[in-house]
Image (tube, rainbow, N blue to C red):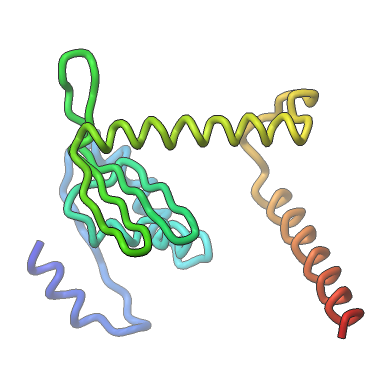
Length: 169
């Protein structure tokens, strides 16, 4: 691995690198689709890379990261079996003026509390938007069609806000 890292220092923008790994076939089946997504030279690839960029700076593998506007809570793995439950190895809170490591028990308690809050917010949003009255949809989507529709909505929103800004000028 140190040789691989040393090689990265010699790479220049615009050059291509060939990466080769030897792994157990079961790991390869799981990892290859993820690696392909991470290495894609597309906006999707960049989004995947940005989503996990903080992994390089963590000592333990993060199980989950909760982000607010100014605060972050990271729950660290791997999970450890204890009697009939599992505990993270710890966690980290970063909020203005505070950086604090969590014990396995604090991390577990905070993780459960945040999950409960998320569940309440999702259910409240679902009720407020009367989503319970709708038929369930297929969670998979046609990317081409869905992206085109989403981009059209965003463009419509931007045009509306440009007009509103011009009206107030």
